Image (cartoon, rainbow over all chains, first blue to last red; front, side):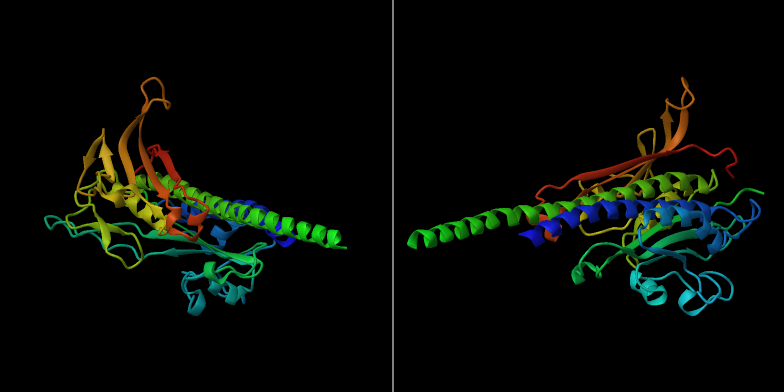
Length: 181
Length: 196
């Protein structure tokens, strides 16, 4: 009886903690998407803010809510480039596809912040030719908050939970903002 | 002696009955906690997706219209696009792409458009649906008059709404959660002054 009582007790605490952590992850991804969609440098710039700028903007928000979890930018820990930057390759060429990839790279109980920008659409053909689908579209930006958060859960393979950590994979997508010249 | 044995036996029997009564209640409570976690996450995601969708409407040029043959919004990566946005304002597609890209579609999350019973237009103006995208998970009124803003005349804004029911019957929690709560989100975006 006692183990069941404690299981229930810790489940209640964990559900509360998890709600706070997930809420922070979702709002960080949302805030990151807004920032990543804005032009860097000048209003007409085609560049998006660098992953370090993006990470710095959401880092505090995530660290305050994620108890016992390390928050990192998806960049080469050896000081190399981040995803989407010139020179990035291998593991860091794109955002991680699963929370396990973050764990393999940065260790347990780590959440990574990352952004992927799509290739801009081709220009529309000059009139009188008809416009082609998606021509002149700005690129889309997707921000990921992905990894494993510290938790009190026992290992449950069916749900992808590991002992003491629970996966999180939140994305937010939007179009890059561009202003008329 | 026999009385003592009988007493112990009665106490043991009582403990078994108590345990048999309490265990299902505790397991039901744990299932309830898990269901709350699932609902909270889905609600937060829907709020964020709807808000970003309304804002992204204005990331398209104001007069741009989608060319013939434009489609968008696969429900899962690699699936066929589910919406034909030909002739719609480009902002409508931007809103849909943002919503579909931000929301995580799980099998227990059922949107009204999936039933196919009624029309769920991606974009509408003054209540009239625009274009042929009529089975969208997010619905945006591109000229909604919000009288709370700039009273008394009001201000025309983009208002996006989404809703879905959480079908716990499609999860292992079905035994403890027989009901299907509905989550919904509404967001408005005001036209930015420097729109291209």
